Image (cartoon, rainbow, N blue to C red; front, side, top):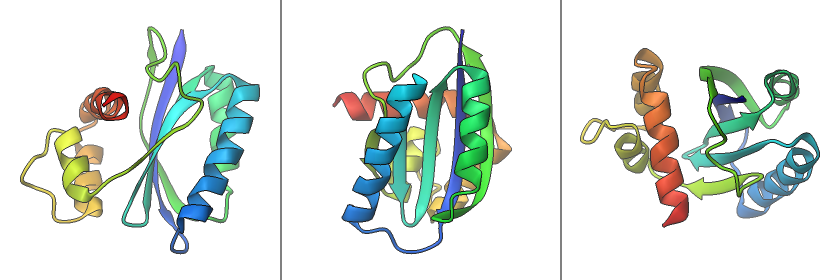
Length: 142
């Protein structure tokens, strides 16, 4: 079985494209070694990341992620065993999005005023996690 975790966090400083590329290079290299797949979404200074792999590997990775000084306020809002990885082709895919796009991916069309409000809705309604995963996969594949 594959384990899946979805978390969000707040960047501690504005992220340039070069900063995001550096994060992605590091993530892809480490994820290749760990056999982890996933996607990173950056919205208005907020990271949303989906990670997939062995549960113990992900738990260890989350300890490292939580201590990373480039972000704060790490909140895991969905974790579960899944039949197979969703992001099999991506050691770490990347999407830049707007709060409105995130709201659509979470099934919250018309309610987004900020990324924080979208994430609060997702935290309150954890069943939206798998919906976000499916819609992010569609967005990457488009």
